[in-house]
Image 1 (cartoon, rainbow, N blue to C red):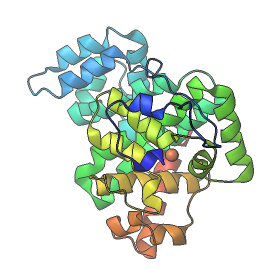
Image 2: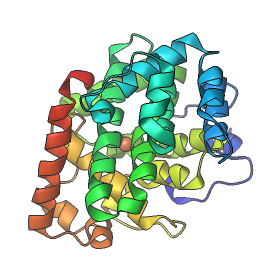
Image 3: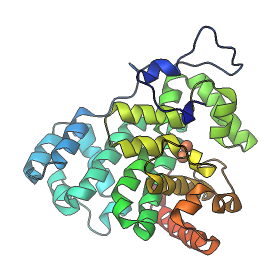
Image 4: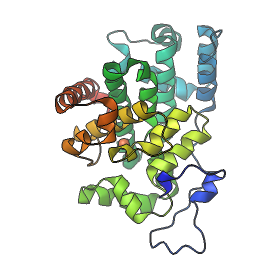
Length: 302
Ligand SMILES: [Fe+2]
Ligand SMILES: [Fe+2]
């Protein structure tokens, strides 16, 4: 299966159909040229934020060049997850209040939100689930592995980005598959493996993130977030991060923002639980934390 193999040198080609295939599953092609493009300004802002010498003024000026992105950044910065009681009216106020680490999250959230914002209700649902998974993954990391909170948020945000890539390139076929998973109450990942040759949303997501040249840990989190429900792939390096994202994904879905997945009993027996040392009691405590963060941010998750 595509998810289990390492990415070969020319991975997009490897995901494409071969003339001689006898695989009865549906053959779709993912075009490298048509992968969604992140805002250039967002990419530059993230680079600036990685440099200790960068001043707040430089970041503000750069963000100001992309008005739509700036508006999104303000909206995200003023959401309950970031703002507490102190909203900011301007980018400079937000930059000052948030600080470098939070600003990184906010810029990535705003830029990713742009990719999903097509007015299509299917995309809106995937976005709500992704944003919820980001918040949940950060909240779980704060309790289990605080050093990973930052990366866990971004990994949660991007874990299902493969769904938007496939949906954008094959809306009719993939829209049908999504609806079928819903109607049959089946995990989408299982249905993809059954019906699609060559890839799942997880492998395509990993591919897109790699193209954006983000942290390789984020690529792994997208590729393996469902695999860890049952096994540990040999190529995995970021066990804790991927487990956090897998758990966040599951708990968010169990709270009603996503499709069906493994039961609590299956989860307790999974590599996710083993990696994170979860007991049934610990798991229910973490589920309560996730419910809490989703409740606090309910207005932004519709
Ligand atoms: Fe997924
Ligand atoms: Fe997901």
